[in-house]
Length: 242
Image (cartoon, rainbow, N blue to C red):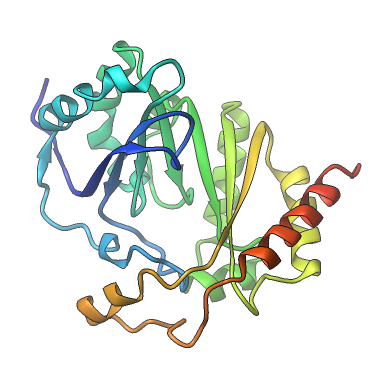
């Protein structure tokens, strides 16, 4: 195996929230979005390349006995697509070991399509469904790139989980939820699961430590009961015919 270098923020060995089963989640550094609700601002910047492919493989393979039939590895971030070239060799080796690969992505940035094809499951983070809303949330003009990514994963027939962060006074309203259901039905194929993630304030201290301005510093955490009710509305709308 070559000694390609990969910039890693942290590794969680027994995650149960980043895909099916028990997983090793690799949080990669580097992101070209600046989402106002981000709780991992430490992953925005691509710091030193602190792992080789061999080191990461050895770290992951130790956990293989715990993966069972449906567990595996999740590449998250940051935005893992930005390091796709350096992840291909590692991913190919993991696949040879029969390890399930999940890619947790916003679908933004240049990427090597070979890496995308190696993924068994894609967790796609929805920032906003309109161009203006996307720019407001992410503070970038990447909406068109996001739409192009959805077309690519449709063409590859990739299995998908969808994640949507629900933020107070931003998208916690019936109109947005109904529009989200319509958008997903008309735009993205092969959706197996949709998750609503209530906005929380657990990452606020990170902004202070990193001396980064927190645009949502005045916001309170999303009420989980309200979020659950919005999810029920979403399911009702999603089941309706277009």
